[in-house]
Amino acid sequence: MTENTVYKKTYSQPPVDIGEILRYCGCTDADDGFIGIVQNLLDEATKNISYKVCYRFADIKIQGNNCDLGFVSVESADLAKNLKDCNRIILFAATVGIEIDRLIAKYSKISPSKAVIMQAIGAERIEALCDTFCKDMANQFSLKPRFSAGYGDLPLEIQKDIFAVLDCSKQIGLTLNNSMLMSPTKSVTAITGIINTDTGANK
Image (cartoon, one colour):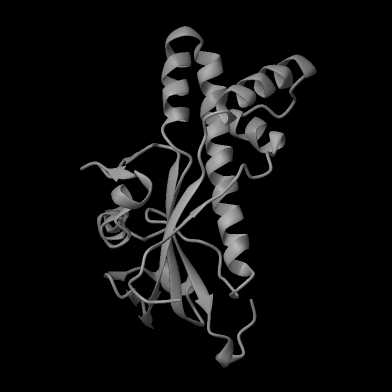
């Protein structure tokens, strides 16, 4: 894999976890009728959802709480702990596209309860995409759990650097506004450490 090269992947629909959608809805005791509504909305959503990821590799150096990620240097005790035993990372951005946002907007006007379900479907779908990508990469590398800007003490502001180095807008149509909000909204950026197996560290 070449440093500084941004790669792209497009996936077919990852497996759906209805239980996760219900969890995002805050519904722990759904009856068959509610599950039927969820399934109907899921069927509507998945007709137009796309699953896109762009990613690149970078060498890193961790000294104390300072994380030199190659494209940016940041102070974060939580990220430094996450990247222990790593000397490279996979930096990635993932999105399920704008159609889910349009459906959320549509149902916000005509059925707020269905808008909540559509929000939950979008959340489950982007998480499923990230899980699928990480499992894909785990076939080649021993990886740490993914870590995103805004988690723990990692500043949200490094999103600007992530978007710049991945060229997210060109690669997968993902943009970032001045408030650090992504569009499409059901999108994720993350850092995944590649464990340096030469150190004898285990996954």
